[in-house]
Length: 369
Image 1 (cartoon, rainbow, N blue to C red):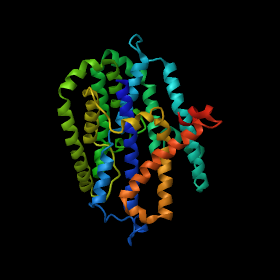
Image 2: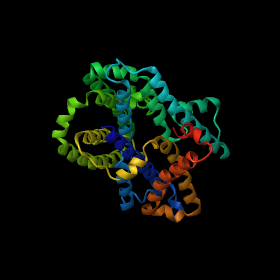
Image 3: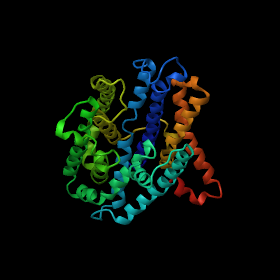
Image 4: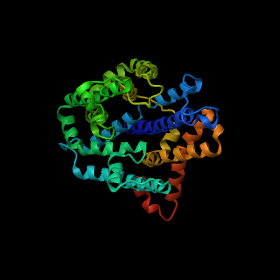
């Protein structure tokens, strides 16, 4: 089971790279179109094109990535707790939080240096807020999210051992309530006195993703109790996953249409949540599941966090270099997407390899986790 979970983690990592490369693809398509077409930006003339729908598919494929990361993190919290303890010890939580915080702070400070060179600075309170919320980089919200989940994990572990069904139902209701509040804002609907609640739970705070972490903890303690029914319906789950994937693509297009907006940055929807759940359940249901690129995925074990911290800034730099020096490439997603993906994967791996073979290898874990 541990080997399978590591495989899910590494596949989710590749999915995250795909998602963020697609994000830069949309920027190239709409905000930077004047670099390769005679248009005024933002230009949405490519909406509905083959390239547009290819990017939408690329964006939808890895929608399970963050839920999978959190599920695996929750599962290993259960493993670290063990069967005999009533809950997880604070020393384990402190160690895991420390392993996240040190590299996170280091790379955040480095990115602040980049902002300073560009002439952009924050106040002391602004830097503190950036660390607390992950605002330094759009991908960094995951670190404060995971830390906030670690901090409440003693309570979640206790409930997972004693009232696991109630924990699953309760955490699902909390998360779904938060997600339902997204819809009025997406659709441009005024909900009156409830309007201030729309963005009251940011995505870096645990209620926004609590179910996935709680589900992982419950699976760590009670997997045998629901694995057999899952195995019996494994092919049904796989078929449902395919249907939900298609439904998710259609749903987002419909949301854009109903919103009256030309374009909306993607947010996780209820269908996306259902899709993520069926993907995770499929991993649990199939006894023999050979992941694509399993050989390469095995080589990524232990490097996930370093790649996560570095890939997004690398993609931004590569995209901006292309914008300035090779703008024609921005119009060819079939070229742009592989460039961004492999830069986001290859540059972090190269940096980790160089540090691990250098005189500074003793600091490796502080830099990459």
